Image (tube, rainbow, N blue to C red; front, side, top):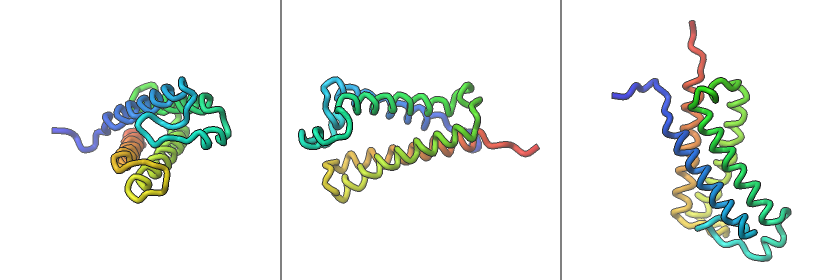
Amino acid sequence: MSDPDRPRRWPAYLMAALFLGYAAGKAAFAAQARLGFPGGPPVSAAETAGYFLDAATAQWLAAATGVLGACVAVATVTPAGRRAPRALMLLVLAGMGLAVAGGGGIMVVDGFVGIGVGWRWYHGVLGAAAIVLSLEMIRSYVKATRRVPA
């Protein structure tokens, strides 16, 4: 039987896997100097031309954020990561949670309601899962690092 007070590690590892998948997809498109994501809605040439960064640069930066996100996710459950100042880690996790909620939220709304981006219903399901997983990872970190009264 599992201990209900014991923090869970699987959300962090699954979140890290999602971030690494995101990074790999962005790297694949960076190598082709294309905006977008494999399996996602196509980005027109006009949108690419009007983007504020070169497509390859933008995608390599996005790939780097995916790797960084995976590192932060794993840090929430490793001894080395747990030694990081809690306030700093919570600030980073809050920023990461907002980014996941923003991206996942767009996928959910466009996938189920349609706002013109081109995400499908299954992308919406993935976006919702990423949001819930991110929240569970943050909740587990908070629970694991809370101060126990003496």
